[in-house]
Each structure stands twice: as structure tokens, then as C-alpha cells.
Image 1 (cartoon, helix red, strand yellow):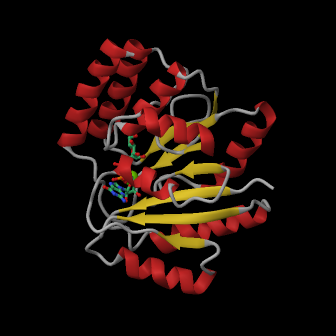
Image 2 (cartoon, protein in one colour):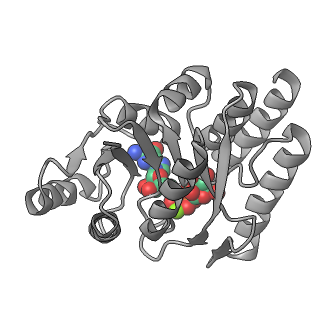
Image 3 (cartoon, rainbow, N blue to C red):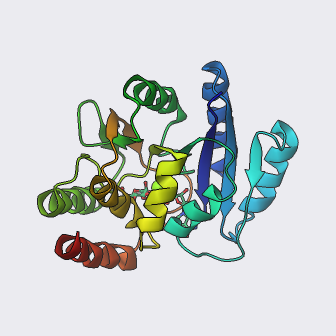
Length: 237
Ligand SMILES: Nc1nc2c(ncn2[C@@H]2O[C@H](COP(=O)(O)OP(=O)(O)O[C@H]3O[C@H](CO)[C@@H](O)[C@H](O)[C@@H]3O)[C@@H](O)[C@H]2O)c(=O)[nH]1
Ligand SMILES: [Mg+2]
């Protein structure tokens, strides 16, 4: 039977964690999906790990696993760390701040099964997909980053910087081995490497809703890193 390991990277998400976990359980149980939720917390000072421990007490350690690290080491490496503890043959990656709604997961799974895709990527930039709650500046950064990457790299996916995705585990293992970046730019590199390695990608339009609680961890450093990597991939892949 297929098993889906859901990786939830967290940094200061104490308010969002109980809600996202509750929603995941609700939608996945409803669809009779076999899953585990892996929380990868990077030593959040707000007590996210204490909340995770409470959730494990409530829902059980067969459903929720906490695989923490001592300090903030970046989003890309958090996925790698989480995956090393995953027992599923499929991996689902999503944000923990309620920007990614678990209701889309059954659609990802259905599409993957129908075409045996290696990857299913949520997209904000196709069909019914969209972004809600971002200010103009943030929309411009995301659109700009996507437009530039589409233009330079010609990937076979419409949302290069999004991070709501499903992977076959062996595919993700190969992609991780091929990827070099550590921060947010990891999302883009995965899709670029996927094309080079000839993995197939399906897309599900998603609505991305900006967080209500807490702050985004994306800063100028991440944006500069993205631009540098974009040019690097353009020149080398
Ligand atoms: N463990 C860990 N988790 C992290 C780290 N940095 C961020 N996270 C977690 O990663 C998720 C996304 O972080 P946000 O700070 O909420 O990102 P965002 O600004 O909303 O960015 C979103 O859009 C980007 C552009 O489309 C995406 O690249 C990004 O993945 C995310 O979907 C959240 O669950 C957050 O707690 C880190 O260093 N370590
Ligand atoms: Mg967010």
C-alpha cells in the first residue's frame, strides 16, 4: 500500500502548527490516505517544538514525528533532513503556515496515479491557481522570479518557486543528490534538475493564501541567492 510522508518544515510556527496538523488529519483521513507527518523544526525560539510534542500526545507518534535540528539551517536542508526519516514511498512537501491547504493533497495523489508522474507540483500560475493576501511588492518578486526563470531555463512546470509538491521518494532522493542549494532556491533547482534527469511532472492549480500568524522568513538574502543561482543554472544546465 502506498504511504505518503508529509514534510512540514517549521521555524516559529507555534500558532499555525496545531491548525495545519488538524487540517491534514481531517482531509487525509477523509480520503483514506496512508500517511505520516514529519515536523522538521530548526530550534524555533517561540516553542514550536513544545507544541509539536503536545500534538504527538494527542494524535499519536505513528501519525506525527518530530525530527528537530538545533538551529536554523535553511529550508532546503530541512527537507533533506525530513526525508532521511521518511518511511513512505511518496513524499509531500508543504509549508506549515496555512498558505498551502491540505485539501489539494488528494488531487495531487489522484493526478500522480492517473499518469504515474514522478512529481506533481502545485501551481499558482496556471488555471484556477492564484495568490491571496500578498502585497504588490511580494507579488512582483514572485511573478518576476517565475517569469525570469521561465524565460531563461524553459522548465516543464509553471510554478518554479512554489513548494507544495508530491514526489516519488526514489525520484526525490536522486534530485536531492543532484541539488546544490540550501535555501528557498532549492524549489527552483529541483524542477530544473528534474528536467535534466527526464522526470515527468504533472501540475495541480492551487490557491496560495498568505499567512495570518507569524512572519515570512524570506528576506533579501534569499532573493539575492535566487538571482545568483538562476544565472548559474542558465550557464551550466
Ligand atoms: N525547519 C525550517 N523551516 C523553515 C526555515 N525557513 C522557513 N521555514 C518554514 O518553511 C515554510 C515556508 O516559509 P515562509 O517564511 O512562510 O515562506 P514564504 O515567505 O511564505 O514563502 C513561500 O513562498 C515562496 C515563494 O513562492 C516559496 O519558495 C516558499 O517555499 C514558500 O512557499 C514555513 O513553514 C516556515 O516555517 C528554516 O530555515 N528551517
Ligand atoms: Mg509562508
